[in-house]
Length: 168
Image 1 (tube, rainbow, N blue to C red):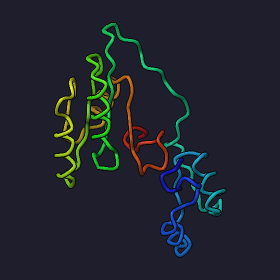
Image 2: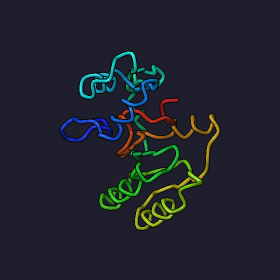
Image 3: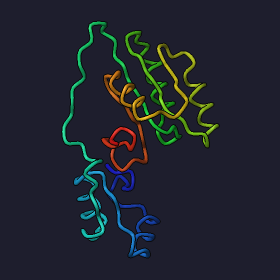
Image 4: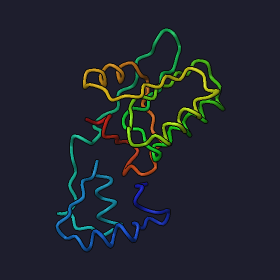
């Protein structure tokens, strides 16, 4: 489900009213499924919906099997409360699996309060690496190639299969 639609499939009234007022505004969708959802459920004209192919997942690559039997998870990109990194940390604390390694890579200089929440949530969680800075393109490629799965609990992302950092 898109974060813009409620459980009944209705778009937020505020968002919809703003979209109706601003006739010159188009929506960029990460894939055709989201485009169809806006077209069908919100009755947004097809010519106002743009799919950005570079943000569309064309195939899924399975991670390579490592000999050390460790699972490497990654959250990457700008840290903000809607990404729910603290909930991921809580789940890892409850799982208490010594073979799971989690890296939180990225920063947000405007979210000092959420950075403190992340730091507090890291307490009691084993095998967590926090890299609190921005990365070069080469560094992003390296950190992505070292993980088995990139995970997200984004609650306001239009779709859970897209992340600006991951898809670019």
